[in-house]
Length: 323
Image 1 (cartoon, rainbow, N blue to C red):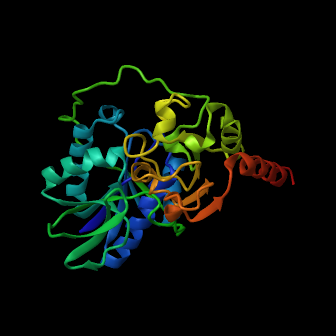
Image 2 (cartoon, rainbow, N blue to C red; image 1 turned 120 degrees about the vertical axis):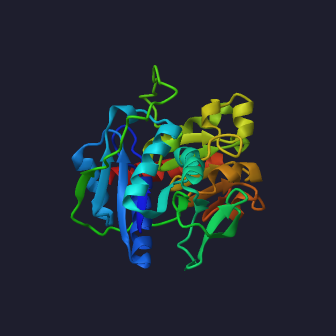
């Protein structure tokens, strides 16, 4: 029995999230005293594949078939099932993102496997297999037992630190039989923003709320994000009032993100907003209300007027960059 980790790529490149999955899977395989293999679907260059070896995985299985060039949940679920059966995988690990949420239930039905979604800790015990998962929008933990022979784990982003453990990598063809893999839907055209960092891709997000008072005060927010090579975001009231575009809205009814650093400026910290950003590794809050709920969720906080604090913060960053 082995551990199989599905490493998603984005236009042929792996992000930090995929490396987190490898770090988790390698450590878990060591505890189980078994082997781990990574599965990559899609066109990825050999040099990029070998990057995964920096985090301890020794075998990488690739599937670059034309039938798998575009993501289709049903097709990918069939392909992953084939690989898991060949590898006799007792554990399948993937990200707790939109892709993982589309794949895990389908794999569960196909493989009669129990699923633990939003895993944030290593297992408490291996026999029985008991593990903690995030629940109530990340505000609590659930202790889940998975009784099936095959188990599926979706890993919450930023729950595990990257652990470099360079290994000599062997890249093999996954040997997927694509004769019955025909996607029911086809992507005809893809339009991408090329002049702006996507919110879901950003490692640093600078977000603001109605505490900024007017849309004309957004200049320092954009400048701070630019200096940090980050993306801008906002709370729902801000997008509802038309101050910022709706694609920047984060929260339970907007985008769910998990950057390394999330600046919450002039945001009170309503439960619905925190539900969308609770996966952030560090939350830095700036608010003039010391009783604002955002400070309960933040690792760092400044009580004060954002209109006075932001220019000083921007100036300090400019000086640090020019030094």
